[in-house]
Image 1 (cartoon, rainbow, N blue to C red):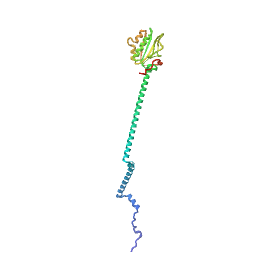
Image 2: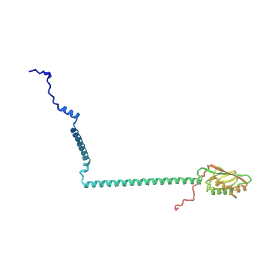
Image 3: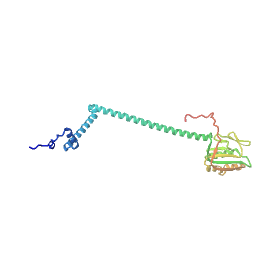
Length: 254
């Protein structure tokens, strides 16, 4: 019987271990394994979602129906109080805006009135367009009545401010008197040439001097010459010191 060489004998097949089978299944999964993996993933996702929903909903799930109604009523009441407070604050804001606007308007009106009264009273310097009338005595003497008539005509024509010889401001209380060497205006002596600066609309003021039988004719009849210059701007620097009324008092009933 022939002898068998040990080197030529075939080794029996080796049975794969559990680790080898697991590795082979992970590297080359079968269709059944893939389906099982997908089902397990969906089941896990559903479980996590249910847990989250349960955690969120459990706050109110244990409450009775009446408790939920009371909670809703409380929220409604809180909302109403908040809306009422918002409305109150908006009304307060509107009132403050209205009051502030009224105060500002009243203040602006008072400031404007103060400015106008200060100009009319002659207590502040002013500037603006107007005319300059120069009356020069040549063959006679200027009469005080002719000077007063000219001032009145200028006021009627809209003169807003009048100054004579650069040093006397003419206002409602200014007095004119005959005097040696000239005319006393507001207690101060002025003499020829009389330079009368007047602020107002130049063309209208000029017309108040030149109309027939007006101031120009009166001065020329008294032996004086009259020159009128229309100016786009002139300054009146003379002011009047205000006097405190001694007898007149505001009427509180008006």
